[in-house]
Structure formats: C-alpha cells, structure tokens
Image 1 (cartoon, rainbow, N blue to C red):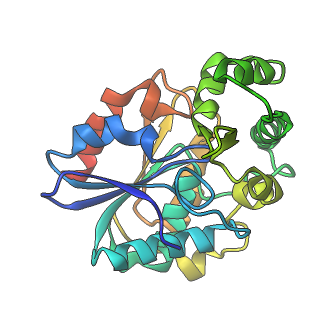
Image 2 (cartoon, rainbow, N blue to C red):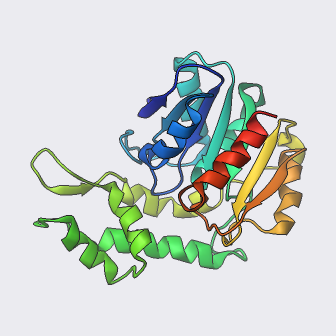
Length: 268
C-alpha cells in the first residue's frame, strides 16, 4: 500500500515516525520540525488513518509490509524508526522481520505483548472499545459544525483533551458533509488484533540484536517495569527509559524531554 507521508529536512540520517491508533502524521509535525536540522524525517499515515488508503485488512504484518514498501520506494536502505503505541508495534514487527533495514529502533509507550481483553490489561482495551464505540455512535449526517460533533461525543467521552485529539480525524467531504478520516468499521472489527500483535510470535525464533530503546510515560499504564523481560526476549539489548509527568501521549505532554531523550539515544 502506498502511504501518505510528510517530509522534513533533506540532510542527515533517514528517520521514520509512525503514529498510534486514532493518530496521523500531522500529530508529529512539531516533533519533526525539531529533528529536521539533524535528520531527514518522514512522517507516515498508517493504513486506515489520516490521508492513507483504507483497507479491510488491518494487522501488524500488513502495516510492517507497508513500511517496507515505503522504504523501498524511497530507496532507503536503512533508517531510524520511531513508533508510538500502535505505530510502535508496527515498528517492532518490521524490525523483527527486517533487522537489516533498521539503524536504531525507538518504541514509545508500548511493549511487545498482548493488551487484549483477556489479559491483565483489560482496562486499556476497554478504554479503546469505549472510544471506538463512541466514535461510531456519532451521527454525522446534517451536522453543521465541529462543536456539535464535540457535544455529541462529550456524552460518552468527558475528557476534553481526548475528544479534541479524536476530532482531528474529522474532515469535510467534497459535498461539504463531515466524515471520519479513520476507517472506523475496520478498526472496530480488528481491535483485538491491534491490541495484540505478538502472542503468536516466539522470541526464540525472532530475537534480533539491534540498538533499541523503549520510552514510556511515567503516568501511563501501558509499560510496566517487568515488561523489560519480554522486551529483551525480542530485542536483546533494549533499554527502558521513563519520561516524568507524562502519560501515553508523551510526545504531546513532554515534547522537550522526549526530544532530549531521542538525541541522547540516536546520536550515541
């Protein structure tokens, strides 16, 4: 699949950033502008998100293949790859399949494990199920303003910051009707796979030895101390770093600390 992308800078090592679930490349523009002086940065919209094509298939093998196709099309032999949340799992799956194409790997607030509802992380999955259900319940026909959409959504999702983030996925069609850029039906159908992505992999068969760092938000529940065990089963020398006073969207909550951490790791 040919993915939509944004490009920043034209000198230095190639660096690809993959957004998370409900996100898009434009969430990362401010970060890219701080990195472009040292890197040639590409921000990708993953399938079923942003301005990239929609597909009935939404799994990590396919998304990793999308990244491979992008690198091949751009004739990029090797790149730093940064992935947040769902994008982090895409980046990990790509790295396990094509370690020779990774210079350094940065994973933001996600671990190589299942977050599916049957696990100990049911609350995280339930939160996503609530988000998808809430977005799908919004009736866009005849809506004349984003404020009206926000008012509908507030009944189900009281967090103003979360709603504003999600509403970035609203756009007007050619006939002026509001529509979702997200492929909500497919995301809803494949949510359990999005929450998983690793339970079918054996670390003994897929372990790689590439420079890898996992960066988590101190206030996020996605990555626990004990997750270093599974990280290092897949990525032999992985480091775990914590950004203070940040939750899951650490790039929006603590951008300067994230940039400093990236500089320390990528320039090492």
